[in-house]
Length: 246
Image 1 (cartoon, rainbow, N blue to C red):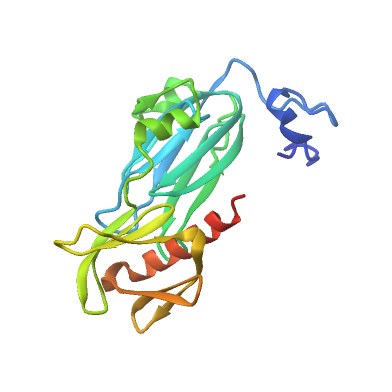
Image 2: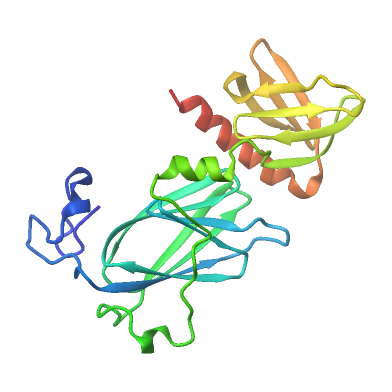
């Protein structure tokens, strides 16, 4: 986090307790004032799940494609996490005026992207005039126990994607999870499971997914064309994240 006046990088996470910049003495925010965060969820296509928005790991909101939510926050530093399916993006914001934040899930890159704009002339805080016809959004969930509490409440092992697929001459259902994928066929109890930590690469192969595992073992699945690019991007990014985690 940099001081907005002198640009100096504030040390570590000590800036969370700063009200004045220790280098130039500039006031970073006015304690006691409340400001408005307008968060706009830009949709990609019909059927997208609502984007979840977490404020300081204490409040969770939901925003459907095309909707806006309005959150009143105290002046100061705040952590905002956006989550769509398993993808997350966390930003830290010094709130000393009103902000408009646009967030959307880019299905081609498999990433959440954000655009942040200050509202000029809003440093005085929220007023009835600045609110106009906007209504403060109530959180869907509130907890004082942090991120883990939300994971328990939301559940973290539902498939991110589930659709019909074929593997060779077998027709079945492919379920894409955050740590693995599973292919199952009707009438068979045993599932074909691929753990991401064992994946060497995932490639395109004539419109199919070619997942290469250790030992030169290839799992090839033909999947619907309309979600092919999105699933490829998700697998590529998620496998990389899993393998980079100690």
